[in-house]
Image (tube, rainbow, N blue to C red):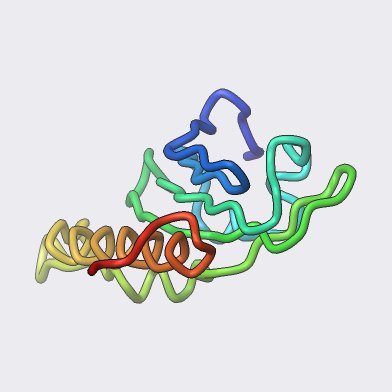
Length: 131
């Protein structure tokens, strides 16, 4: 599939950086692929964060990416690869349920994503750390 503009929303808008959320039926492998967000290049700035809810019609999995570079008609992402995100929220179950979606591991992966997003915002001076 391809990027769909209506599935991109702003979670946090700072003076110099934006945290986005993107929902898609595409897998993280597809989203992480070269050029996925290129048609939306004008929306992004370097160091923006994109939280992704992927594979919504299959085995949903969260991912987090940082925008490392933007140029006319080009967006370059860095951050979690699809492989590392898959490892953070493995499928669970045994026997007939083998490969079923593991909500406990997904919750832990989501907590890790939120913590990583917080750390990114603190590192870029967009949020104060704990006192």
